[in-house]
Length: 309
Image 1 (cartoon, rainbow, N blue to C red):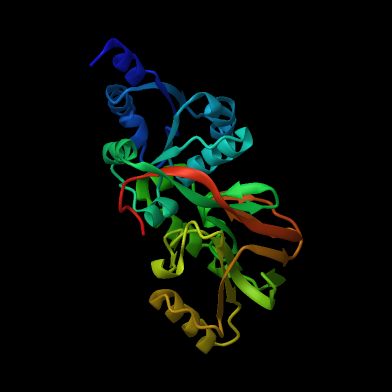
Image 2 (cartoon, helix red, strand yellow):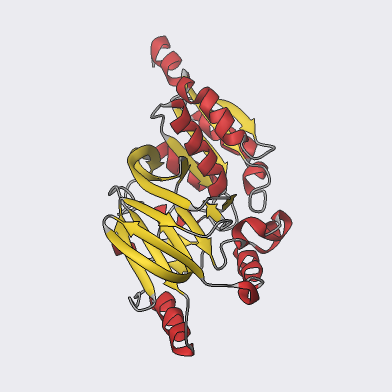
């Protein structure tokens, strides 16, 4: 190898953003090994450890244009911040994701490894692939904007419980919502199709998994087709309705009498004042008028070959 080739090999800069408290702190424990791996493969790591909400977006926006690759290690919320930062910076720097959170819905859709070092190696061996991003009244989300039943569990579950119990913590927290589930009256327009009525749950997704509770058949989801999947669950009027809802979710065969499912490029909703949402597992206050649209091929993620369809 010539001196010029050696310089070129180490000239690439990588922005590494780590959430040290995500999941069971796996990423933090492996940080030195991850940095060593990237160094060995020709990357000079500019490393930041987040300490407060918003750090990931702020740091990424400041440095995204100065590096050839961005890697984030944490949960889906950490990825959301990094994606937000890339969009703010107006660059197309590819992003690698090391899923180290408690549930990692988006990572499930991408079939990313939950092992930190394997995920890091897959980033190095992968290639950039374009993916859609959702826009919620101007704020981006990677895979879900949701409201209603169990939605609050994602941001109300204490971090120590997430670290100790993982996905089970979300289920236990969600069960606390059961006595408080109330019908939500709304109207929605999705690519010219209208829905109106009382619902207990709604979501716009670009994922095959929602909080590990609701799954969408992978053949019905394309993560880069310029569309989001709208799911609205009607408020049950009878025990039979409730049975239909449970069966639909369990079988992934949505009964149109109780669950509306439609891919759409843009959805506008009118909802009650004070309705709260979650975007990629984080609290979002929303508003009475909600405008959600898909931004096609807005980001590039490093994906190993044949990781997804």
